[in-house]
Length: 355
Ligand SMILES: [Zn+2]
Ligand SMILES: [Zn+2]
Image (cartoon, rainbow, N blue to C red; front, side, top):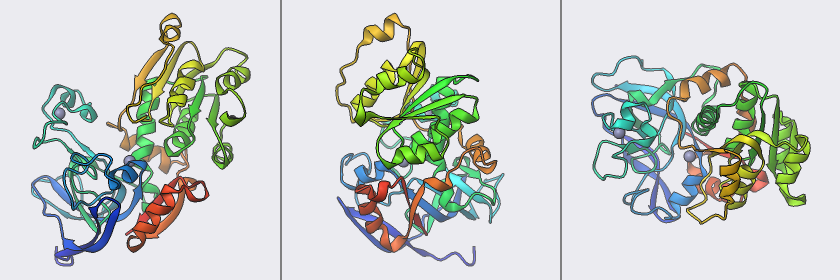
């Protein structure tokens, strides 16, 4: 513990859209927790909403607050009772700490912890309702930390959180070898889902989106790209599948139109994963189509039990995350990074804060 300081630099959200980098005390370790020196932390679309007060009162519960939930770093100190990790280990961190005792947690579905919405209970969502990692150090339960090999950089480790969401979606949707898959929304999760679909045996992946992101989707292996601004995307997906439709579709855009496209572009008996959030807006959906064609629709939240396998896929080169890191900023320039991400400068996919 000798070379660990008592204070650290952190980006603190003081008011809506007001972040200041300043010195704050280091987090104190509770039993079972690990102190991690943060290597890099990504800015997520959710961070843009949190910082502007969209979820005020819950994410964060109060100000000032340290955001940041997509990150990796180096183990700096172990709290009481921690086993399985050593000082110096490189790790990536999960966000959801389930209570561990409710029926969903007991099934391993800690992303659906049943006391999550009960204030003051054992559930935590780091970077949302508990302190995040836009700071030099962060404390986390050892159970949320997963070792990463040396060939995965900290910048790349900032993709693991969203990538694991893609893996959870692929698992929920049960892609089978030989499947044709449509990915609606070539953002970070979409780009990962495209690669994961191929890694688990999809023979054809169609990416629906627009602009330069479609070029990146092609570079990452998309077999077909559909620009939804130049025609009906459902018809386009049907056209490239001989009129039949895709076996599975992944809605990764979080828009009403993408939800409709995903549910309409699959074949009879097809499967649909809803990964994006539309902000609770009502959506006009033809549910007769879902009923009469027996379409399975899966909600997908977070990434339970998906980190270790995703880390292996990245380390083995099956999922390219390097190309998804758009720009890297020092902690002092976090406001510039937020602004650049908000404007999606140059089609930015993932802005990373290197700490
Ligand atoms: Zn996120
Ligand atoms: Zn629980």
